[in-house]
Amino acid sequence: MKSIKLTGLRRMEMFDVPKPELASDHDVLIKMAAIGICGSDVHYFAEGGIGVQVVQYPYAAGHEGAGVVEAVGAAVTQIKVGDRVAFDPAISCWECDQCLAGRSHTCRRQSFLGCPGQVEGCLAEYLVLPDRNCFPIPDSMTLEEAAIAEPLSIGLHGIALSIPLAGAKIGILGAGPIGLSVLLPAKAMGAGRVYMTDKIDARLDVASRAGADWVGNPDKIDVVQAVAEREPGLLDVVFECSGKQEAMDQGVELLKPGGKLMLIGIPGAHNRVSFDINQLRRKEITVQNVRRQNEQVQNAIDMIANRTIDVSVMITHRFPFERTQEGFDMVTDYQDGVVKAMVLVG
Image (cartoon, rainbow, N blue to C red; front, side, top):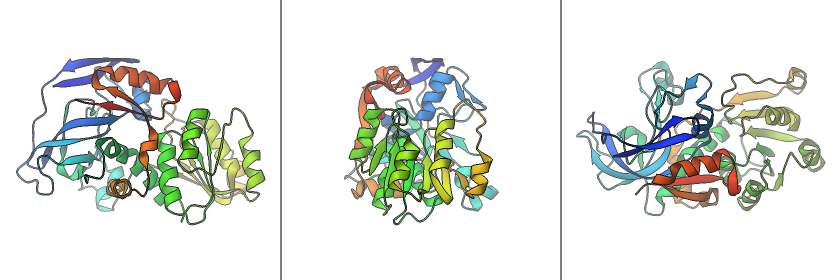
């Protein structure tokens, strides 16, 4: 089969590799159809790593995807050949203290697709995963929408960790796929006014179409002042979705006393961030990290399938498999107003 692998900084090549086989009675063989390019993939592509996770070349990235089941192991009962499936890229052990405590996303022995030193990613024609990681999708969903279920599940997990959203005034800093994955369900779940920022105006246009009540570019206006004029008491919760230090600082300024800062964005190669402890302490701000997602994939699928939300607004560009590098270059350089670029296999 064909696989696209990283071979250096901002370099990718197509390889002929053995087609994966079922190694367990609980394995599922998926013929890939749609693969989303994620911000974490871009860190591996452009920087060679995230924190201590350093790419050893050649290596296949990719963890957002969907496809069609081609074979199943003898013990698989809930999935059959021909099913169209989305998948959870985090492979947990289901035996450690974290898994048994309902925290499979922080499993002690977890492997993650496209994560260096763990499991090669889904930028390939075929993929094998445990049946527990596979989620059949209904006819009402496209395979591209199914691939979006992974980032959407992260947004849903962040919302679940924040506060009751009914009527809440929230900020979302970063209008990329993760920011939109917070915005769409937040509005559907009864959030009050949503304030959203980004440095790319084209992304702000998408955010407005997706339901943001106010959008602003921090390179052009004083965002804190603009929001404070509209919300003198400031915001209940802020979702930081860019991984940038200046956005974290801005998030603290935007929060009311007792507010909550949700850290979802990935800082990339930088392992340390800082906060103004004076503001954190005086306003008694809670800082909550969001680690991927926890049991939200099915909820994400249901929201898409039921048309509670429309994730198609995120998909701005599509590339055939052989032009994967073009997609990665576009996302890395924020070209042409890209939000979510999809790689289509076959």
